[in-house]
Amino acid sequence: MAGHSKWANIQHRKGRQDAARSKLFSKLSKEITVAARMGDPDPEKNPRLRLAVKEAKSSSVPKDVIDRAIKKSQGGDAENYDEIRYEGYGPNGIALMVEAMTDNRNRTASNVRSYFTKHGGDLGQSGSVSFMFDRVGEIMYPASAGDADTVMMAAIEAGAEDVESDADGHWIYCADTDLNDVSTALEEALGESETAKLIWKPQAATEISDMETAQKLMKLIETLEDDDDVQNVTGNFDLSEEIAEQL
Image (cartoon, rainbow, N blue to C red; front, side):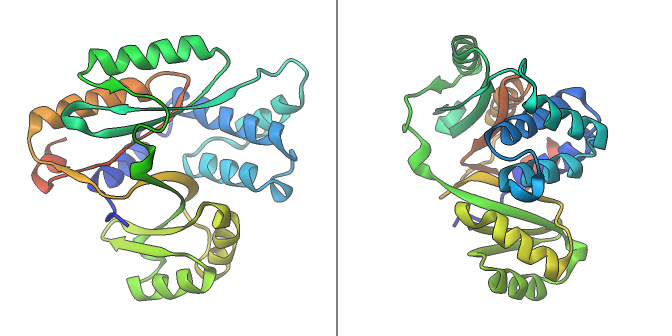
């Protein structure tokens, strides 16, 4: 698997700084509502909902907001969201996966296409870049959870497939279908994780070492993430140390 990216670390820190943003709360609440509607409204009986609630709590979403999102799923007037994935290329041929939840497919497709075009990218067909990524579960622990060997042993015993540790923390990867079981087993060994979610993990990453490309790519990603319908954006790139420090 590709090494854990500096961009992921930047995203993690950025997420902490932006935790109070209503837009982030809205996206996390939408995932909770969709997860609850698709299964049981009890997180203990619904793995996807359990993970969605966990992710919301890690971003400091208040309990009453989480409870409202679950109750909304049971109401007759709750919106019906379609889950859609868009694939394309950003500046310098960087592959991008865009995950969205929308109540208007035409609006979202039009917006996403315009963002790619405006910022030097190209929206592709379904399957045009997904072959460069693996769908896996990612569980993140802070560095304080233990040293690399301790976390590695706990991860192996929990059924994980890979672990990447650095000064910022530990990232544990498992098969997408095993995320709930591995996350639960790790909680018994290491305590509660900071996040546990399904991601698109690049099989290989292109390092970006010039500022112009980095800025164009970041602008495209930020524009996509700012859209209310877009839940997640993932790219097969990493940033050089020098570029990462300047962003």
